[in-house]
Each structure stands twice: as structure tokens, then as C-alpha cells.
Image 1 (spheres, rainbow, N blue to C red):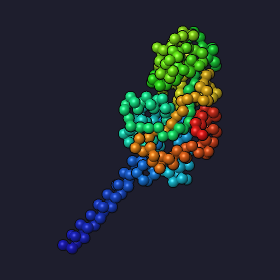
Image 2 (image 1 turned 45 degrees about the vertical axis):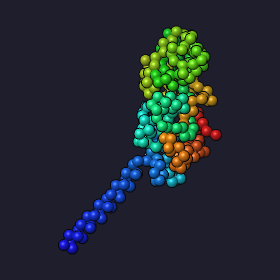
Image 3 (image 1 turned 30 degrees about the horizontal axis):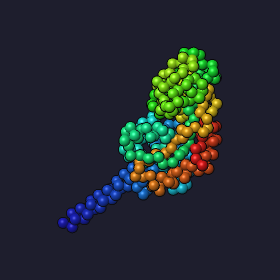
Image 4 (image 1 turned 60 degrees about the vertical axis):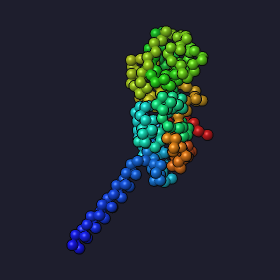
Length: 275
């Protein structure tokens, strides 16, 4: 009888220990905001991912444990954040963010500004927008925010004129003057660089341009100015906007060490957008 009781007690103790171990493992996978200062940070592949790697390195010195989660599109980072698969994401401009959360009714908010990726016009056969022939096929992103941004870029480059009342909400239908009878083709943002061989030129987001091997500051035939309003920012769930771990991440991200890394790594193609 005593042996049975001892065995039962031993099994119970093992069960308790196993349960505690399971809880610890689970909390390690859920990310930060639970007191363990471990954050799961969502970024898009390319420059955002590279910058985060530097932030992770510095975070370890500050006692902040960061787990990266890399995405290859502009939809899933916000969806994953809303569904609590990640704790914060860093990849998007404010106009895109505002349109996305309104469309999907997501309880997310802006956290802090990060960097600016100037959108550029790229071509394989010409070195200047003035060399584009009449009827040239020109690609641009298909999502509304980046499409409007690209059209404004085309207007700045002298290719078109837009309805002045539309601004960043411009669509192809708002072109009031097409200076070269150009054919504008809307494509998925992530695919444009891969399809550039089939186009005469295209507006490409910097992260995808770099991923395709371009150096935007050198290879773009026309590029947004450095004071572009399309600043990228971090986003969090509204309930977590004042979390201490998020504040610590912001301070590390916006540090002199990260600024120096960005300047040296991207040769002016990624612009620091914090004071």
C-alpha cells in the first residue's frame, strides 16, 4: 500500500513538473507582452528583415528577446497581428495601414515611425523616363494605396497628369492627360520586379527592388524625393500600444547604432525617418 502511494505521488509530481514545463514552452512561443519581454516581430522580406536582424542583435544587449517572422506580401502581417500570431509588425506606410484596417475593421494602431523606402521607376532598356517611347507598357502596383502612390510618381516624372482633387486616392481612371499614350498595367506589388522584362518600365517598392538586385538610389530612372510622405511605421494591437516591451523595441530601433547600420548598408536607398 505504501509503495503504491509513493508511486502515485511520484507520478503526480512528474505530471506537475511536466505541466509547468509545458506552460513555459507555450509562453515562449506566444511572443511578448506577457512579462517575458519576448516579442514576435513581423516584417516583410528584404530591408525590413535586414534592419530587424540588427535590432535583434542590439536587443539581446538590452535584455529584449525578439523572434522574427518574415512575410512575403503586404496582407498577412496585419492579419497575423490582429489574430495575435505576432506582437508587432514593421513594414507599411500610414496611408496603406489606414486603408487596410478600415477595410477589414481591425483593432490596430500605429506605434512608431521607422524608415522610408522611396518608390522608384525602373527599366531595363532605358536610363531616363524621357527615353520611354509612346505607347510604352508601364507597370504599377495593383493595391489602391500603392497604385495611387505610383501614379503620383508618374506625374512627378512628367509622364501623366492626374485629377488634382484625387491626390493619393488616384486611380488609372483619374489620369486626365497621358503624355505618351502609355499603357498602364496593374500587377501585384511583389511580382512587378520579376515581370520587368515584359514591361518598358515599372514603379516598384524599394523592398521588392532591392530583393530583385537593384540599388534604388543608383538604378531607379526616377525616384521619390527624400521628403516623401510615405514613411513606414510599426503597428500593434490597440490594447498593447503602451506596453513596455514595445517602447523598448522602439528605442532600440530608433537608435544611433541602427541609423548607422541603415546608412552603411543601403547606400541611401532606405531613409531614416525619425528625429
